[in-house]
Image 1 (cartoon, rainbow, N blue to C red):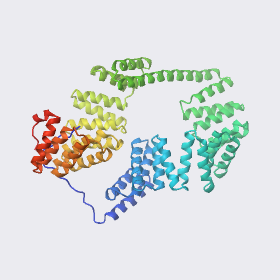
Image 2 (image 1 turned 180 degrees about the vertical axis):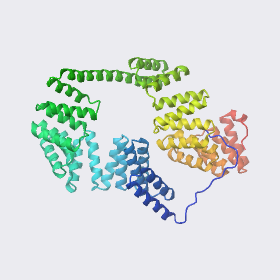
Image 3 (image 1 turned 90 degrees about the horizontal axis):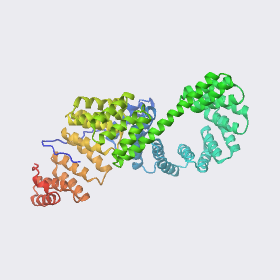
Image 4 (image 1 turned 90 degrees about the vertical axis):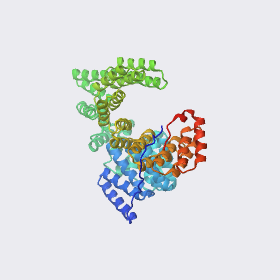
Length: 552
């Protein structure tokens, strides 16, 4: 993708720093830390970024910004903030590779994003750098447990317990001992956790589970009661209490516990099943039948939905392989299997659109939205359909609705940004494309389009900044160097532009446009012989350039 050369005089402006920049950065950091302590995450993030604008190589500021982004992301469920936190932890590690806390933070960020292998690598690095780092060791142990490696998990926890005994550590050791089959040791560990923190509900719950396996019904019941008392919103604890009460003949208590578990977790099938059995044992046959029928209906619905989802997955694979007729048939079967499933109609629309039947695609998208009015992807796809039909008002309306339905989808902001740019709303387009990049820092197309829009809006400095970040992230991306050269040329800096065009041509020797633009930069510098040589290379690679209008 090439940036179109924009005619006109563009100004590059350098940021003006205060004379006491270090003091200013420190004030921003202090303010950010105070805001973070008050859980004013958004304002804290802004203050940390202002500090980094002044002192971009301060590892601690990157680290604290990462922590704040992580906290807000976890609190609000905004995954893009977790991606941004990962980037800031990585920046801290680049600046201070031997800083154990930064490695620990990076490991936790990878775990948040579902990459346990990367998390393990960073956590191991953290404990190697700082063997006394309790948090990193316990985190490492929990990942080992998740990966069914209780031996390594137990070893890590024992190292912690030598110097820092805690209820949490004994709980983790007990879980590892349970997986290793040493139930006696596990029971001892859970009891130690309870002794250290009598109000630690997970330890009571785990001890109850273990006592049940050992046949100590009274002990198990007591522990489950304690777990529920300490953590009444835990559906699993309510369920286990119900099972124990039912086993010991307290049907009324069991029914109450199962109902509470279902209220906390409405799709809790095991709780519904045992509630039905408990009601049946009480002689409440009608209520029992209602519960058991409900389970059958839920199971049938899940079966149909699962079959439909499998058909959708097969259809998506068919689309990737350009088998559009197969994809269409699979999505149609999914709709027949589960006509109430919005995703089935949405992907049917995708298949119709790929086959060029826009009317059918529109109908499918509208049906998906009828079933799920806040279906962001359907709004976005429908908006693009309207955009291709040059129906500006409906296109913008649908694309905005996509963002209102789910503001955390980078592609929705990108699509709206493209549409706004097409209709000349460059300032608003810039905002949407920036939002797309913030949500997904690796969204290369969004960065390229952002540079294009900034350039069209006569913001050469902004476009240059975006493209320099693109080439930093993608050092072998020839087109990005070419685009950067065009922006520099626009800004009246042909010497700097020349270097970028040369790099583009080096990375991609057959890149005719890079040679053509290099010729233009050389011409601007008065180097006519070199310019002519580059122009001939461009014409040799792409003869159609001979018919292009000259650029000045």
